[in-house]
Image 1 (cartoon, one colour):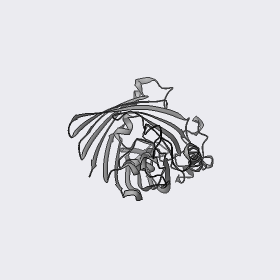
Image 2 (spheres, one colour; image 1 turned 180 degrees about the horizontal axis):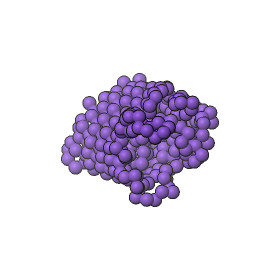
Image 3 (tube, one colour; image 1 turned 90 degrees about the horizontal axis):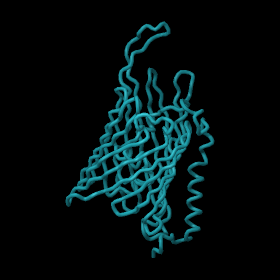
Image 4 (cartoon, rainbow, N blue to C red; image 1 turned 60 degrees about the horizontal axis):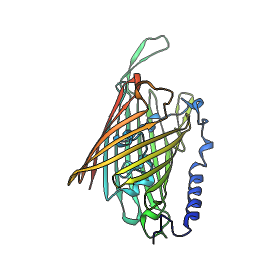
Length: 330
């Protein structure tokens, strides 16, 4: 039975022990990475496109998705959250980014009952047409840099002695093949891992933990750059059935740690139509107050099988980014 959010098989002490072991297992490798988790690491990592939000929903919520993800894009946010998929999910995102660049994301996820869930995705970043020059400043022709990542992952319950799914820990892992081209091209393999805790406090609070891009590197010329490792701790507070408060604390290996907070309100306007209102804020660029760069907004529409999300992200003098995500569940 469930009593005030306690976990069978060890109670709150067992929960604390498992959560602590989970955190240690995910972050024990962090000291092995280049960088010092502060500004001195800026520019020391490759494949920066891996940091870009995979969905409009995540962008609108300041990327506070470690616990909230519940569709195929969970493979990006926290592979453990793939377990939240209901049957099958398909996600497509297109982002008109800054300086004539664009970003596309596509993912598929499927639930396999109590066995767990599987997901696969593709990320693509096009940096536009650039003009090359030699050491004398003479133009050598145009080229189009791009980045590509193909991912596959799986999530499963890891505390099966708890009868109800919401009382179980969930573990997820994914592997990524990264290909990046500037003029020359290089490839590498990296991986993500994530954990979701059981629901606590009468199913009103849940936490998640992820470690992204935990190995690999890309070599261009004589320099090899590590992957942009990112550790995140997230939480979800379910105020009402249609209202969530969210927070994430993130530690990137190539910058200062930062915190984000967001809220999502879901309103049923028709029998088969729901409208979602979203807003978020982050301290990632706290020193840059120009153009409300630290806030984000979004809107979503969800039907019985189709959903459409939009996000608006200001970038100050660099302009604004717009993301649109189409979701299909069946």
